[in-house]
Length: 293
Image 1 (cartoon, one colour):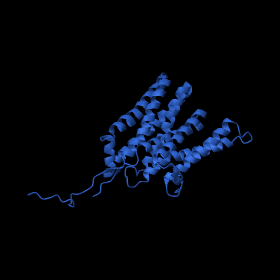
Image 2 (cartoon, rainbow, N blue to C red; image 1 turned 90 degrees about the vertical axis):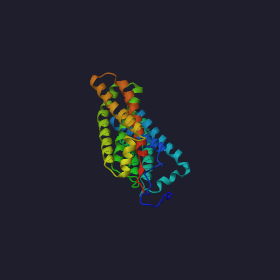
Image 3 (cartoon, helix red, strand yellow; image 1 turned 60 degrees about the vertical axis):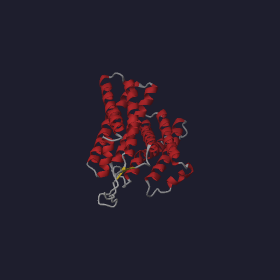
Image 4 (cartoon, rainbow, N blue to C red; image 1 turned 120 degrees about the vertical axis):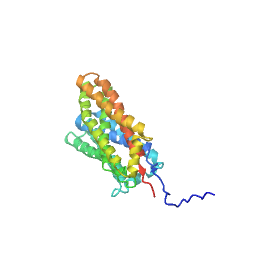
């Protein structure tokens, strides 16, 4: 007669548990927020571009709407400002508010010449908006890295990845705008910046992967999900190959030959934007709680 299993034996343990709270809506919010903030910085300081500033603000507003839709109770949104001393969510929400307010005033002053006696006033508001945009680019990664219960997020590389990818997807959004406006000369210069940002993003990503491969049990499980598990297709196929390696090859070839600049900008912008979105999604879904023994 067989003995019943003893659930309290020494072999009893609870395995890995994937987090289920942060998912597609948060990935969309982080993507729109980072892309909008990055686009604003490029459209303000690298090549002043009113359309780029306007689109960047619309992207940030769309990010806020995505967050409100996910909250389920939008009337409680004001509570996100209630923990500025300890919460990066509160600080991020405040940075978004300052960004939208300062960017709107700066655009109005510059476009409608509302401060002829104070010519530097628009630049002051643009500087405030830019500092707020930098915080907005960093804050999703800082929020995730503050979760000690999910070791794969609890890394300084996560905020750095979000920052670098915000610059990169903001630049890709600028390529798309330049393509539709037909500005070939500016496209060439903007694509050249991509030859710097794409390798930076690739190095940061590979560094983060290397650290995950040598991490604890839960971190290595997240690494497995990204490289061999359920997220493998999105991560290796879209984020790494289509989102980084292929645009790097296309842009390098276009700049060397001087041909197909506009087509390269269109294809590369779509690939980089897709890779930027799925990077956020994969990082969120690879968040794994350690096993309980």
